[in-house]
Every structure is written in structure tokens, then in C-alpha cells.
Length: 359
Image (cartoon, rainbow, N blue to C red; front, side, top):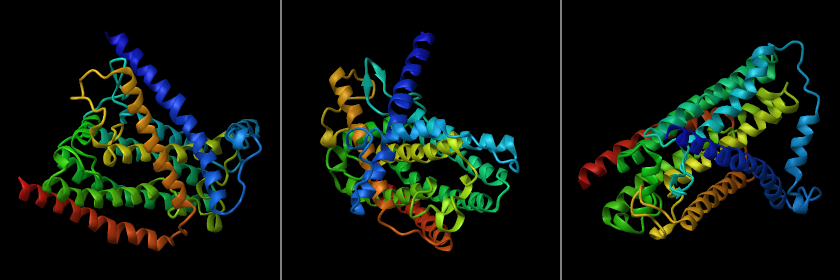
């Protein structure tokens, strides 16, 4: 029995991480270049493969073949460790995301933990160590400034990011992401309570703090992944390339991949918490319980639904990047500490009062 669990987990890791998430990283890079080109009235990548779809493969080969140059003045051990510390945590957080209901009788989640959001925040916060090490070990002023910026930015917005999930946990009474998705599938998504118990006065009133949580969560996720308008740690106009200025070849590619992997996992977490994860709207094809047997074709539809929502959220990330200008650093810190921190705390109190009044 233990071997069956290990083999099933290994298959899920291979399928979800190596055959889905990593190719999705490559396609996200292609999508970013195509979408930005369309928004700026340019052509974008269109030479390598149909519609430039193989451009990401060509870029990967280019990174592999480039000279792996390590400057003499860097602290080599930490310099080599930093890219891995940026990439690995982003992939580890895949473990608790339910990317489907069931397939062949197996839950479509690698590790069905009862502390899902806490696991994601705990592991994702390790990324800052990679960025700090990259900035410090480079022994150069621009990477060092980028590392300092990344540290203060990620610590500041982790607080509001964590607080934004508290109202959702209070309402659903769960820390298991699979159970949260099942509740949304049966009673309406957090941001679309239009069926089941969500279609009531209580459901619509509780949608108010959930919407506030979604806004705080989304903006904080942009800051945590260093995406525009919060890309101050690698601001080209001020810091050359920030914390990865001294990197080349595959070490630079790991930073690049880590950013996009974090964006995909952040999109997956947003979809899971606020848009019903793998569930279809209005309770279509929803199993009676988390342990109920699901037909093979329904399980496949649920997986496709999850990734369709994730791709839509990734496109939202991309459109925002090429729409908004970059914040000044003082504006970024003021937004996190003066506004979002207080609003997130107020939202927790508002949720508690609503739950008490509606009990």
C-alpha cells in the first residue's frame, strides 16, 4: 500500500510539475512576448515554429549553450546557490494545489495537506533568501541594492498577503485547499456566489470581505513575484538588472524561470481560493463529496477547467505588466504599510462581525 502511494505521488509530480507547470512557464514567456507585441502594435516572435511557438525552446537551447561565466570577485558558493533557492520553492508550492477532482480514483493533488495556504506561504517566502544571496554574493552595488529592495518589498507584502486569506479561512472554516474548492463548487465561488447556499443574503454579504481579500491578495501577489508595477528589485532604468546583473547562462535562466513559475503558482492559488479551482460554474459536474467516485471524462474536464482559469489569470498578469507604469519605491512601501496592511486588518474584523451577526 505504501508503494502505491509513493508511485501515485511520483506520477502526479511528473505530470503536474514537469509535464505541465514547466512547459507552461515556457508558454507564458511566449504569451508575454506576443501579448506585449499586440499591445504595442508590433509583430512579436514569429520565426521559430508556427506563430513563434518554438521560440521558448530556442531560448532554452541558447541559455544551455551560453558560456557559464562566474566573475572572480563574487562569493562563489552563495553565488551558485542563489538561483536554485529562487526556482525550487516556486515548484515546491505546487504540491498542495488541487489541480483536479479525481482521476483513476486518485485525488488530483500531490500532497493533500490540512494546512495548504500556510504551506504555500511558508515555502514561497524562502524565495527571498535566493534573491538576497544573489545580491550580496555578487559583490556589486547594483545587485546589492536590488537584493535590499527585494527583501523589504517581499517582507512588507507577505503580511498583507497572509492577512488577505484569513477572512476566507474564517468563512469556509478550512485550511485544506481541496475542501475549500469543494465548498465553492457546491455553494458558489468566493467571487461568484450564485448557486447553492451562496445564493442567499448571507452569501452576498460575505462576498464583500471576500472581494476585498481578492484585491489585496492579487496586488500583493504582484509585489511578491516582482512583476510590474512592482519590479523595483530588477528595475532596468535604475539598477541595470538588479540582483541578477552578474549572472549568465543557466543561472540567469533559473531566476527567469523562477519568476514565471511563481507567477503560475500564484495564479493557481488565486484560482483555487477565489474562483472555485477545478469546479465549473453553477455546480455543473460537481461530485457529491470529496471522496465520491468521479467518471474519467469528468475528472479530465475538471483538470482542463483548472488550467483554463490559470491561463486566464496569467494573461491578466501579462496585460497589467504592459499597461501600468512602475511605482516609485516610496510609493510601493507606502501602499503596503499605510494602506494594504490596515485594510487587510479591517477586513478580518469586518468578516468576524458579519459571521457573528449572521450566525
